[in-house]
Image (cartoon, rainbow, N blue to C red; front, side, top):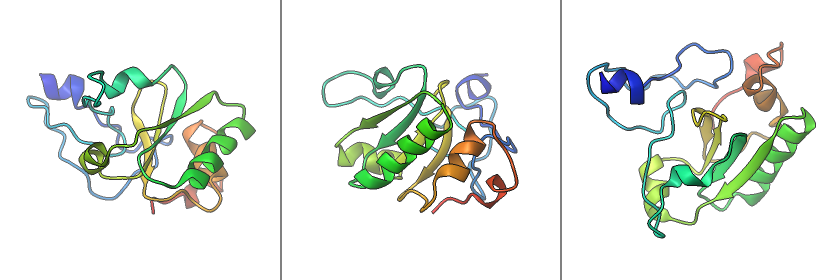
Length: 144
């Protein structure tokens, strides 16, 4: 049941910034997607290595687009709550098109906690939610 193993998607999790809709969760088949709640699917980089080899066991702000300030603000928000974080920039239009967004936040287990084309103006509520500091401000998090 490869879909249950590789295609598992967290739905209704308080530490995932869910988007409305999303792919159907098929247990017997695996259809790679970069939707919130799923594990980031593998793709080959131009160097011949897997994109999954770029990440450590910490939160990661993955950036495909040119929003350097937004990515920096997300990283600073993680540091403000004391969470381990790194930033990975991959300049590849092919991978940007494949994954469908400019910015991602990956959990240490490589599940996508959030994705968007620009960072929120105030990323702290989003980061607090993803780190499990769910409070009244976390309910106002959305995906641009």
